[in-house]
Image (tube, rainbow, N blue to C red; front, side, top):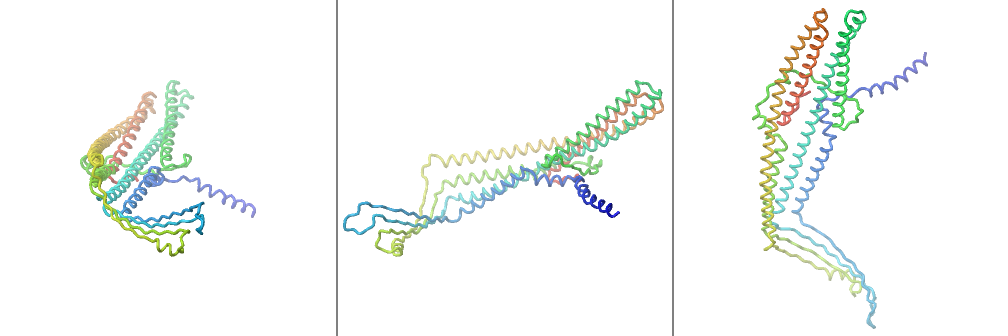
Length: 440
């Protein structure tokens, strides 16, 4: 008895961990988005760009500081022919030491504008990160809704398959009993085979939809995944949308590509100022100390270092009178770049307006399609139930009953497609406006 109890405990010890690991991880939409943002290669590359721009800003600000450098040189000289009577070594050793400092007092405000450009570039990198984040959210949202659609479609197909299987079993028994003809039974059997095929396709669609999301999240394709399926009500699908003008106005404030375009316009203005700074002179301050020693000297090392010690300080002004039109060309190119940036901003705004117009129309069309499909589904369902009752009573033939069922299946499919198309378009409009995703 004790031995059996011991074996039972050992089996429980080894099987419980496997049972725990076998449970699939539950993924909500927010969890998928958060995980995708941490795993996205584009997000990681965007962070590198941010870090690099911060380094460039620090380097630009450091240009206000003076430079300080130390240099030393050492040499050995050999003189094979020494005049007679001179008691000197043929070989001598020389050492020189220099400490120099420099500072740009004025360079036409180039440092000032360079710092502003680097700070602006840092902002652009952050906005680029927002744009990447938005793209990741949209990709996850699309794949997630596709899984919701595939899941509900599979459920509907499985329910229909169960009904078809029961009808097939019933018809087979009637056929074997001689109650119905082979022609009638063949129609029922063909419908049953068709719905078995539809079930396989629905299962495959769900597997493929999950695989797409796994790849997007950079998960192992063999990872088991269960999706939180929120209840989608008619209010979620048919809620009144704000006006197009309101959506566009909100998008203008929230969209990262609009912010990016405006920042690039500011950058082009700074480049004009930086180019014009080339017309100013530059003033530089330099200072340094130096000393040295020579082994052939009669003075001691310490005395040589003292006697050879020297100091220097200088102020230099540089101004290019003729520069082969370099400065003027730089200013003209900067102005052209500013005009190009302005046109780019207008183009991005126009594209955004077209995108919102299209997304808004798609959302409205999907809502109307859902209403029509839902009504058609209810009508097809009522018609099928009536036809099925008459078929069971022998007042309808299998062809009429199956036509009614296929019409119902088509109506259900159209309703599902319209439902999730409307849901996706509504959420896309929310993303464009900088609003949170409301599927949870």
